[in-house]
Amino acid sequence: MNFQPISSGHAVTDRLSSRDSLGYQIRVGTNQKLVIRMDGPEEADFDLYVKHGEDVSRWNYDFKRITQHADEELTIGPTQEGNYFILVHAHRGGGDFSLSADILYEEVVLLPGQQVAGEIEAGKEARYFRISIDQGQRLILDLNGPLEADFDLYLRYGQRPTNVQYDQRSYSGGSKEKITVEATQGGDYYVMVYSYRGKGRFTLWVGSGRKPSLLIITSKDNLENKYGSAVFLRIEEDIKAYAQSVGTMGQEALTVYVDEAGSLLPYDLDPVDPQDASAIKDLLDQLDRKLHSDHFLIVGGHEIIPFHVIPNPCGDDGDTVVYSDNPYASRDLDLLIPERALTRLPDDAATDGVFFVALLEQVARRAQGQSTQTFGLSAKVWEGASNRVYRELGSSGAVRLSPPVTNSEIRRDWIDNKEYYYFNLHGSEETKNWYGQEGSRYPVSFCPDNLDNVSVENAVVCCEACYGANIVDKRADGALALTFLEKKAACFVGSTKIAYGPSEPPCTDADLIVIKFFNRVIEGLSFGEAFLRAKEDFARESIRMKGYLDKTDEKTLLEFVIFADPSARMEASS
Image 1: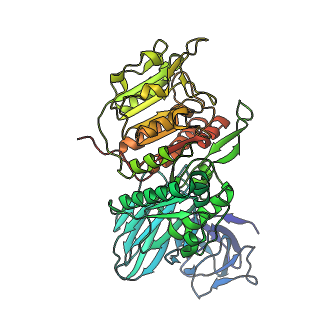
Image 2: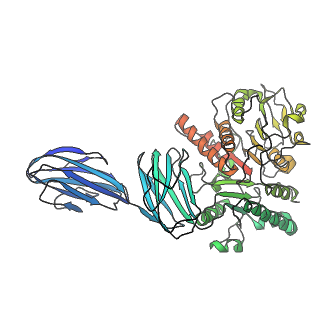
């Protein structure tokens, strides 16, 4: 017998003669409810038989509905995933009939601290969950869905939410949503994950009680071995002061040493080798499942908590590997698209701790906007693309170009006391300078000395130069990224290796990721969240333009890193 496919919510009409049968099938997911309805001729007697996973007959079935009439209804649930085969049999009489199969969604019961995976198979579909919780608890819902879809999150006390009836909802245009209830009512809360657009798999995490807003990750052994006990104690005090400053904002910060048993004892976890990036990521994954923090901060550079060293997706373009924090920011094996708002506060190569202590003391003061002024500097060959990026900062002017501008010609008033700095220059793995270009000329455009007697305090700096964020084995005066941080910039975004970008719009690669980051910071997101969203936005737009992520897209996602307090943000200027 041929079993005709049918879809949920659509009735089919057909005709049967007495003692004849017709077959249908419908695909259903797990934890759903399947309601099959048949309306047949008034004087006839039609019966329903249903089988999961294989052809159904009057002798081989899982469910049946037999009365003395031709109108039948059969409810199955919760369902298993797969095809349900339906047989309509005319036991007596014949005539026209209609058959419909509606898929309803059973509520999956969740417990606080649990993460569940689910799938939505089409736009405008929903999945439902129920959470029983005591009064006065803190309830946290965290949804992560597919990059190319738009999934929304709804919550309602006492009954299922809908798109118009809910207590809280989270919708952002993407599939990463979050809802927090500070003090619950006692009883059942109902959750709906709804696809506004698209399909795919998702995870939903449920937490209750207090959770840290910020998880600080560092290595006690590596800090002590590099700086000695006395300086380490100073660094430890500064980390505590920073955590307390987070507390003054009504949040909570926890510090974990990846290699200290006592630090990990409250979480029933074992210490790991602080030189093993993969082991640190595994530990971070376990901590995340237990704590599910909003923000994550790596304290220390490559010597303290190592970058992941990943084969270059572009082959050997001058780099054989890429230094990346993306694996730390990812909750799964897909390292390109991060899921954690994670940043790093690096130290430098010096062993006296002067740079690092000053940096930690600065971030404890929290970032504030200071002006609405900007500065941009670009290699002349990239003038068109750079001006397109610079416009995102709301500047009415254009970027300055090198040449003619060189480092010796940069005036103090051009760069003093700005809020946003944008650089699209050449960089080098060996030198501390950034370079312009016109034809075969590559003049020095910007160097650490340009920041002498200049205030960049609390500024956001984005650099597209190759190796702009390369800090491995560098002192504070030997890498401009560290120099900006030493001068109290709030945030530095750049590439650890060779970066890509066009000379003219449309913007791709480095240009595009910087645009997306500027957009999210100006929107008011924290630096960690802005960087996370910027990479999501970058991937989404790259896929929209080309249909996939090419190798330079992949390298861009991996090599761009951020040095900042992840929970700080640029406040509106007064």
